[in-house]
Length: 126
Image (cartoon, rainbow, N blue to C red; front, side):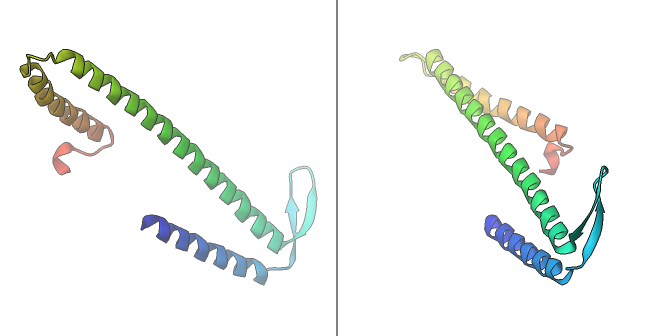
């Protein structure tokens, strides 16, 4: 649902930017440090909007890539921990696995409280 609202907001922004650009068709002088050029304001507005969209899109792609890489590393870590847990449990000994299962949630809770403390949130406020 959030993605739909984001798409609708983006389309509304694009429509408003297009209308604003069409209204402003006069030529303007743009200083490019080494040269000064005369270009229509409509091209300047649409060009700047396009460049901004490319920058935001690139950041989004980078962030998605980083999250996928982190997800892959965490899946490997879970598999490693599952293999370690299965190597600790032997066919006749279920107490080892039970003690492991009771300590893991405690460690996860400790880790969550530490991480939420890093973000500025206390674990009690959640």
